[in-house]
Length: 121
Length: 211
Image (cartoon, rainbow over all chains, first blue to last red; front, side, top):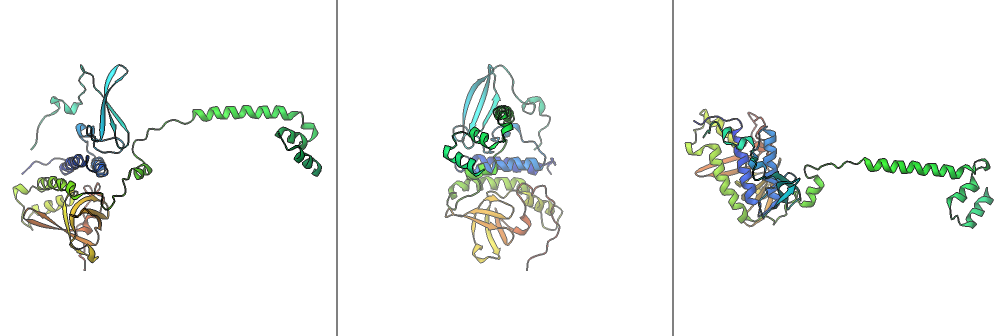
């Protein structure tokens, strides 16, 4: 028997919808953003957190998946003498930025190695 | 009074001040200029206040109008190709085997694990599944097969092999699925819920069968 995890079926569903949305991004933008919207809504309904790596790829405004040269254009910009990565969505034109300094560690706590205690299969 | 209006027409009224001078009683003729000036000051003050007021609001998500202009609500009949959607069906088969734990074997009906299997089927996602309509109140829907691309509260949207998108109401139809060697029948009546809400919604225990 497998171990029970809180909200496992919802996590699986989010994972699947994310994969679909990524597959459809180059073919049909409307469906892609529809699945991205579902990812966010399911996480809201079940009160779960989306993994930051997935969350960064979803557009804040139209919720389509951002893929380089397909649905976004990436730029590195200087903002107050600090470097930032900026993505601009091709569908709605919303910009999304993250700090990206060379010498700094910008990882979130979840992504660090100390955060992983146990891996359940 | 008639005489004054006639004279006013003849002069053709180049300025409003002249008109006021003719109409206002004699005591107040001198005040006209000063009063006009005071009004102008008020107007200036108002315009300054109005300029300060509007604060730019950040729009977090798309409004309904913007969505409509981008074409989020209508999927035209020939817009989706079957070849693009086949890939989705492959991923879906992997997903559903993981959710139902098909590798460990399917439990027999009337055993304890049967209920958990049906519950997980109810909570699963149907985007990308191959559906065929078996029974329906409307005879023209019967035997329609295709891959589901959209799942709303009351309808499924299906792409058939000849690249046509059809919407099928859930409530009146019974669907069939093939998972490897198993055949699953889904009563659309039980699936009537928003796809995001279905995973948290409580399942009704018993429903009366159709006639």
